[in-house]
Image 1 (tube, rainbow, N blue to C red):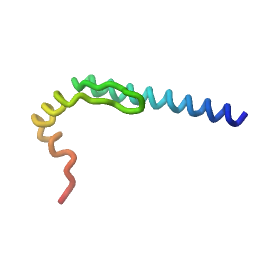
Image 2: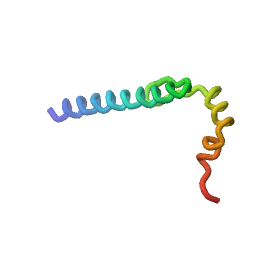
Image 3: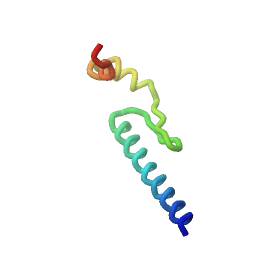
Length: 67
């Protein structure tokens, strides 16, 4: 019985994770970034993303911490 509950809980968790990945990919697509869900990750096409990154100073330096 406990094994069945664990299997069901894992299936529910995988479905929730898939929905969340689809939400994230959808948000990226709305920003004109090519994004596809592949298993348990999101694959992003870099062409337009790099163009946006190079053209927007706020994005370009967003990852830099204080030195």
